Length: 280
Ligand SMILES: C[S@@+](CC[C@H](N)C(=O)[O-])C[C@H]1O[C@@H](n2cnc3c(N)ncnc32)[C@H](O)[C@@H]1O
Picture: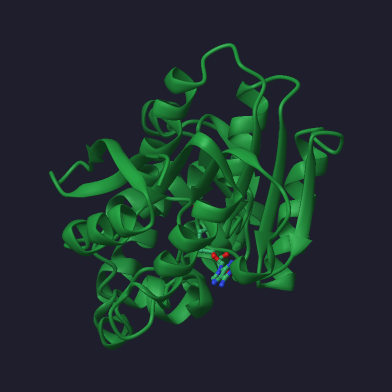
């Protein structure tokens, strides 16, 4: 079978299963199996081997049941690095990259000692450690299984000597002072979870999404804890959900933080808040 015939077959199956990105998903799946780019796949039509057709059919069947491509291939690119992911870890999102880039400017050429609350796959902490040579990070998460995934990424990126991973909740961190606390905590309002797409609600870990009745359960803990473990003038970098800015701003001010700046996402919503811990 030729490339174009196989792509058509894959996209037809996905379309029938109501996968909205049926065309591009069929292309991504085949190009990943053939270890080529989508551009080359589309320009170099060739005959696909039986072995690869079977692989393709099985991945298309998984995608037709809404399984995200990142879980099907157990990998997701973030900040130009490839991270191992499975259903125990949230899939790294492009908007979370917005949290990283300003940190690179604020702490340019510095050695950092930082805490990440809720490491998931490790995409945030490990991208920072790749960028800030000789820096050290402490990463915590309440999910033991995602820490196991993060360890795979630590090893792949050869960052064993730069970080410490702890199976702890945000409430359990004490007695250390950091230059930076960074967090993309769970912030979806509990009753809204059922309205998320099937890709997300059927496959991604609920513990990485559920922010409680007002979406702010973990954010509140992160802000309170950061006010205790940051050095004076240290930075708290926080990703928040849609429409949460006003409530989070109040929480920050109450806990002695001064907002430095915010970053909007691709849809013009405030998604990241950078604030400084000031004197009482
Ligand atoms: C939205 S995910 C972010 C994962 C990763 N940092 C990223 O940006 O892709 C939130 C993470 O916080 C963890 N988490 C939830 N509640 C927590 C708590 N109370 N203390 C520490 N981690 C928590 C979840 O297990 C999950 O891995």
